Image (tube, rainbow, N blue to C red; front, top):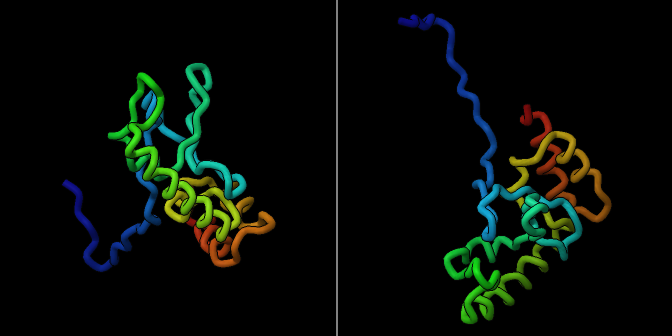
Length: 137
């Protein structure tokens, strides 16, 4: 049995919200964050022995419409995805990077520092990345 000293306050550790783990639509392997230009998809599968794919968040959100056999989305989903991907590219262009705000908590301190100092990254987004550097173990 553990006894806690009633005089010492317990300070809870608050971690920044982390993007949910994303799985590759083809092989199921966990996807990695891509820090690149705005025209690049923000998720990448590193299972290069099987395939080489990057994914837009809109595609991952429509995973039920993906056919692994043909490696394509059903026609109705594909049409809707064009607009969603265009929107993602525009949002990434405004940020200056393919990395998304919900992905920041998945990055290492070195990746956050590189993102914060990268040319063309929106000042507010860079400040968010900088503020998380101290919270990464």
